[in-house]
Image (cartoon, rainbow, N blue to C red; front, side, top):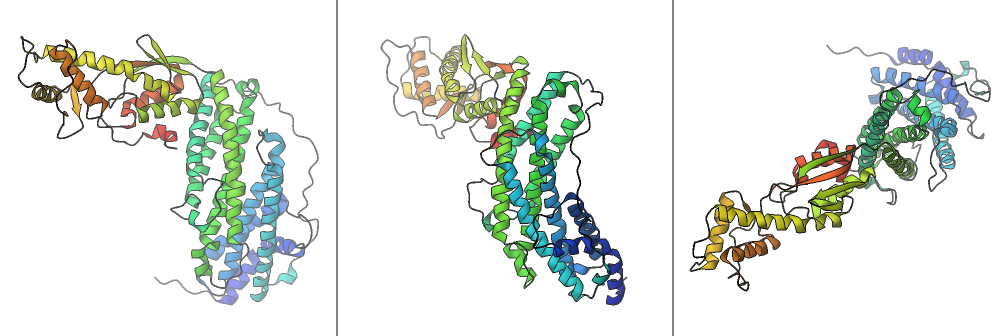
Length: 514
């Protein structure tokens, strides 16, 4: 059934009635557009609340696609978005004394003030354009009374006493470890997704394929919101929070990152929908309230910059917290199936350990290795390869491959057949097909046939043509949380299949992808 069409007079009468409070706030901003800072939480809250309601009403009548009301709807959407951003900035301004933020390279408070000045300028322009549209539509603006003290925010000094009884959670170490570990993982993933702040803002960064997209920011915002909820559920108003002074500091960093991501989301949304090249083609000659490059600069050099700064500060904080609450454990896992602890598995283990900032040792026989150092893990290959060669010699003897007289007519042919037979019995993995044995092996002085065979196989292993299967196990000792991730990595082949091809890491190890 085709919906009926409402007359312009009836719709204007509806909008005049419903927009009274909204236009009052817009007229207030427009009237004071040449004054100093005028944004207060009551004023911005009024703009945000009523612009949201009016936008929904306009959309329910299809104003977006109507030539009479499309501009009124556009400026309403602009006012709603930048009112929301301004409210976030005002919230940060009022909350800064209580966030206990760690120092960063730039003055955050001053940057917040400067960004608020930009959004205030945008709201002045947008409300003026909205008022002009309202006059064009002949809405009864003269009936709206405005007073200079309508939106004043009077705040007596002080705070209410913290006299609510504290809760007693379960194990303190478990609570802190859960929160700090969750933050570290999310911080690592966020810095991988976010654009680098050293780059020049450009339209190429935006949209679905670029790092500056509403989708990316919204996803991160949701996850930091969940992290904040985790804190408020398990840590807030607990004895743990009272005893560990780092916890409220962490809560402040989670909160400020969350608010900055919300602003990033709104900036990206406005660029994609209203200010970017694609949006401008649709908008035509519609008046612009902010330069697109200025909008991108706010994203890169304000929002993303300080998100990255505070994530880095809080990472160090979390690592120190985890060290204090370390639960020492040990696990036993098999060595990487492809060439032992070569570059990729050693690097992944090192990144994993450094991510948590805890000390972890790898034990093999009587040797101890620092798991945070790839070079230390490389060193373990000497023992692993020696063990492989001994195991291989044992397998050759058990399979009765050596003649009783220790003599063969063609040693090169014999070695090749021995390698193929060992591969058939899963004692070897052949990577080079067809396998080239590069002529006769070098004869060792007084070497037995077995020694010559194992020597040639070792040479082929060094060149990467073959490898020896093994079930050697190593032991990792250290922080229980780190060991859980090492175990998960080992269960997933250390990021490789048995032929050395990269395979996807499990979701629990996404922070290693950075």
